[in-house]
Image (cartoon, rainbow, N blue to C red; front, side):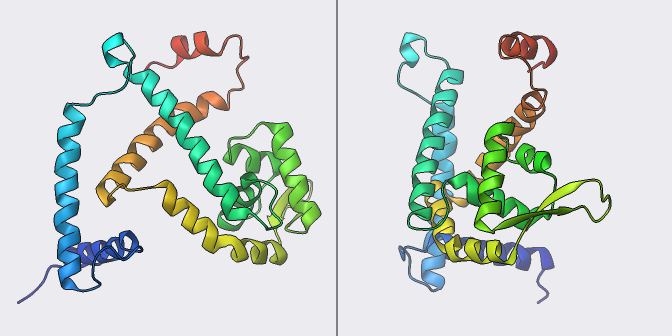
Length: 225
């Protein structure tokens, strides 16, 4: 019997996600455990659909808006993520989580100018320059001439920087895995889609560098949502 390639591909993706979600050994590593994981995942997805319709939150009856809750939860989640990141770099040469985030960007996307690196990581210029200077001082990054334009200086990761990053990647991956918490695969994909939509809305506004005194009024006037 011929099996569709798409089905095989989807099954392999499911097996990979099962392996990731089962890192704590909640399910047996056999077909029975795999089926139990699928059954519970489907059950969780159905429950999530019901909860989405009946969503409740503290202060709702008193008039607290969904927008207020979203803003507060994003702030909280950012603080939780920072706490796990601090744990991931404890005892290493990294001073802050931004240090390894900048380094990861250089490794993933290649050499770029200082401002390109700062903008990619949504940082203010003064703070971004300090991070870059720390990386250069550590020997993890270097400033060189651009290969396409000798008049332009670019920042690139060094072999020493790659080694420093690799030495911490196990803990960093564990930290990022914890941040995703108890979300199942579908919930993770849904969250990625929603956060990406928000990022695409806010990113161009952020890079306009609008005067803080005019920011809110400008967004309401020029960026319909």
